[in-house]
Length: 258
Image (tube, rainbow, N blue to C red; front, side):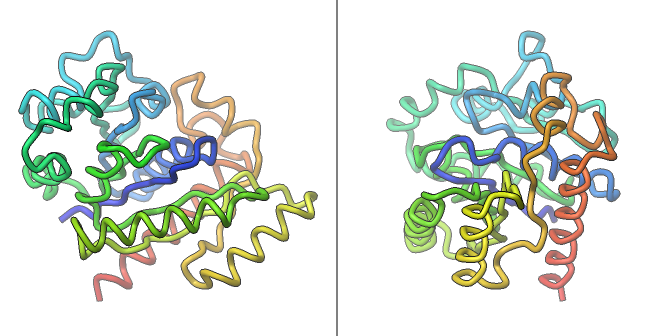
């Protein structure tokens, strides 16, 4: 049975898609069968693993709004043990169209039942807003991983997001847990970054991953080549950081299974 992790933050530019792509690839490198679901209409996770959106016979939109099974939308990436359910620009329409759908918050959750037994991990890349797409992801996930940029407004945005996660737990998914908080775009030379990271660690304690994702050229360049960082420049600090993160996620999964 797959562990379903939604990667979410209402704030844009914090590394959600970068984390979705690179954590998925790093888990696959560790011999896990991984399905990445691109829930963001910008579809950067789709292009970031080398999938051509123009050649897709079926996308996530077709599954959410046209009733097609998720298995029909699964595409194999160029990476062993990593598959993706891609997004296209059509997904923008789903935010509006879901308003009129019965049990609109649980469309993805119901669809996932068909495929959840085929993978070890299902990673969902959420859009930077708490709309119906993100709500569907959180309603269908076992846990939420929150990337947080080491900057001034990080704590304020994190507090709002945790309040919204609590609302999802209360109303739609009582078993949803916090997978962890990931500090991203960390620069050890920046005193503000160090201060923010310390503040978040003091507040959330063991829920903050030991691994911190550095500001790194490879992480910025790799998506333009349609590759996760580990397959673009494996020796880079960014690629190595996500490989370490995958080990933490795997260890957490083993603890939870005991």
